[in-house]
Image 1: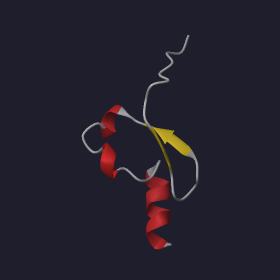
Image 2: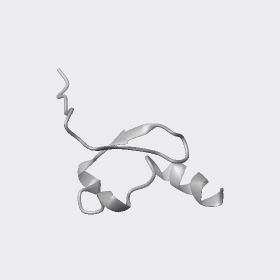
Image 3: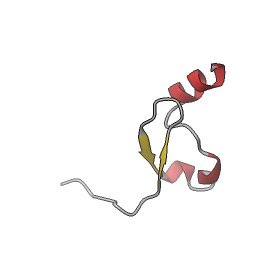
Image 4: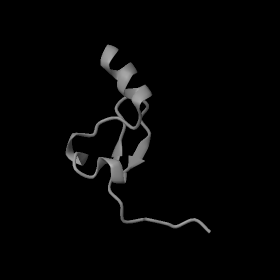
Amino acid sequence: MAHKKPHLPEKICPVCQRPFVWRKKWERDWANVKYCSERCKRSGAKN
């Protein structure tokens, strides 16, 4: 069974408008995370 983590912080991606939650790899830089993925990050930089 999957482990549920309802207490994690969430943000909305400005490119795709989808919510994304905190990840361990973003632990030290969560305040600066804006995009949900590298794909959105690349396409957002052009617009």
